[in-house]
Image (cartoon, rainbow, N blue to C red; front, side, top):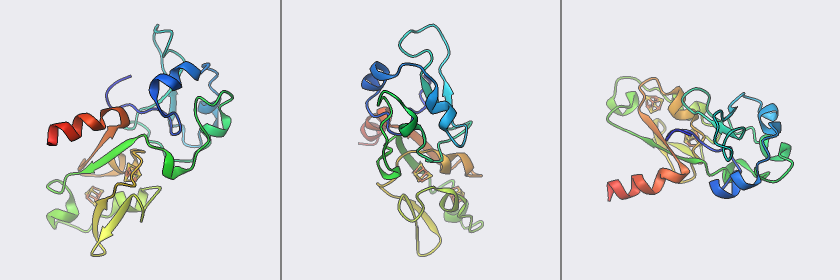
Length: 162
Ligand code: SF4
Ligand code: SF4
């Protein structure tokens, strides 16, 4: 799994997830947005398990994978509990903060808009601590102003900014 790839929403801890996934592919079939892919390769722990590459197809939080999973490797949870990572917006790159144009694309496309992204003063996008890291905003931003950090790498980012 590359550093930008995500586990499905509801996968939780990676070790627990890998121990419980039986590589049946039911989650991949259930995804409404074709976001889940099957890991290839020869590693018996990871080959056949689902992952999300948010740069190619982010998770739109349809939440169909959890109920489809027969083992509980992916829990059936609500959007707000998806906990896949977190998105970070660079104001120095954003069209709206730069004053070029009022864009709002990230806000409009976020499956949790008005919760995970709010508009300050009615037009400036702000990503809140409610962001679950689905990757949609980073995927749609025309300026590539948003970076998505997977759950297991968030502590590295916090440490690098300390
Ligand atoms: S989509 Fe990108 S450029 Fe547009 S408002 Fe959001 S961060 Fe700014
Ligand atoms: S702010 Fe971005 S990463 Fe977070 S939930 Fe919304 S679209 Fe997904």
